[in-house]
Image (tube, rainbow, N blue to C red):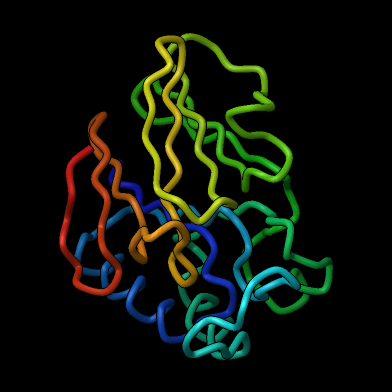
Length: 178
């Protein structure tokens, strides 16, 4: 399975459109969204192209391809406008014997681990900082932020296929190996 992993769109139609072009170009089977899809929250400035209603219009037609978890900026009302579930704090995704524990990161993260087994992959966003770390027992991956990168990182997402992770710069479309 080719999986595109993205987090923290924060209602930016500008960056959501760029992300979806990459999703199409990469021919990913699924788009795994790690929360904070529509709103920017009180701690973030408005991202470029902030238009949550436009993001809804872009994502809903792709609902059959989207797997999503709830971020700390999601509200219950978001489920009323999105055609895919966004109410779970985490979801498990399985591929070729690998278990992905996908969550936003405000509840489960590197410092507050969920129950993981040998070889599992913990995915979370929330910090807006891309990161890959092999802890031996499990691998941790943060795709960074689609719209509001922090600590001088780039607008990013991750492609996973056959055990390999690659970062993609949302602005340029360039790939970076882990």
